[in-house]
Image: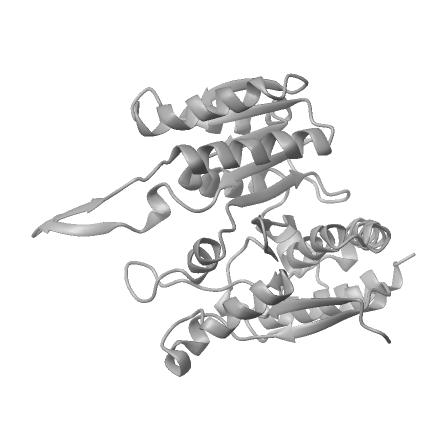
Length: 335
């Protein structure tokens, strides 16, 4: 088979290698030719390289421009810096795109959910600027810049136009953080004026969280700062069945990483029971990015057809199928 794409593959930690292998097998079965450059990143290689993200990993992604990534664990309250944040900031992957919509056959409290979260990925409280002021006192700085705020707002409105969306809603806490969140809103308003075909509105984050759990169908696209986007994207995933069925992408000017948004689940690693849906749907986003729309559509339809059969669902979705059976059933349904 002649290779038409060169893509970095980062299996990740925990269940990462299992679910990424499943995604690779599905892509191969769909007839897309990819030459994978597999590299190590994550907690398991810190002892080997002294960092969860060695330079050769970043070099591979910069060289190929596209990566498919499995979940990577991050220590809580200490240890190494988040590998995900490191990659996003090092590669200027400033836009996190997380589509959230109902999956046919997966019953949830809501129907008709179809929204996109566009999250600024490089600054805010995730800038990682912290220091100990005095014993028992730690200060963490929230950095918001006009450049990054303009850039993410422009990305949101451009995506809204490309996807035929009707509205962008900026999420903020400018009633309290008047300067930082105020700057974010100021930039969003200016960008909105350049895209008059898209409606623009704003909502305070705590009200947004309440409205989402009351009626998520009232939202079309959310534009968020880093921390807000991280929190609400997981909340929104819970509206449609959980993190196991939601894909994600981190986009920059020169590189893109497509990844499942769930954790590495070390407690079930190696047991063959993990749900690969999220990384498979992330690979669907990747294939569209690569211009392989037909294969992407066929894989997405196969995912939905498989999940429509209760017996073929993995345990986290109420079924009894293991990872291998689910993947094999999905491949059988590729048109």
